[in-house]
Image 1 (cartoon, rainbow, N blue to C red):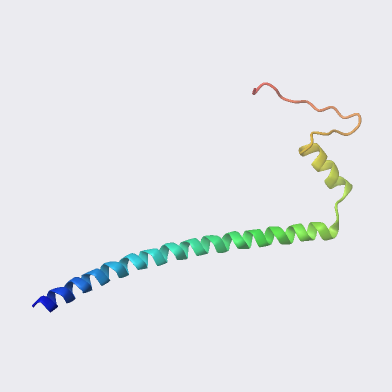
Image 2: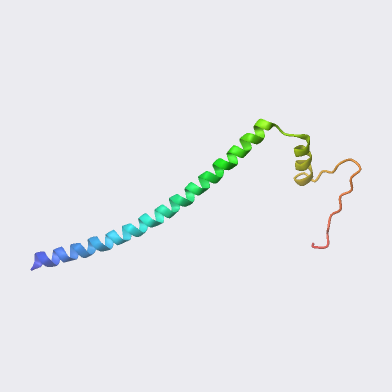
Length: 86
């Protein structure tokens, strides 16, 4: 009788452990899928950057970077800044 009770307790413990492990496996698979998607995005971004490097940088690209990131303007150009939202 004692052996049957011990076996039953062991089976219950094993079943609970298996269910817990299955949920962990599912969670890890979701994480893996998410990471694989991020890797694909980064690889696509890297390929685009490689293509940009191969084609070189044009004067238009330099002008756009100067305008948007550095706040520069062309000679004779007027830049108006909207301060009403501040």
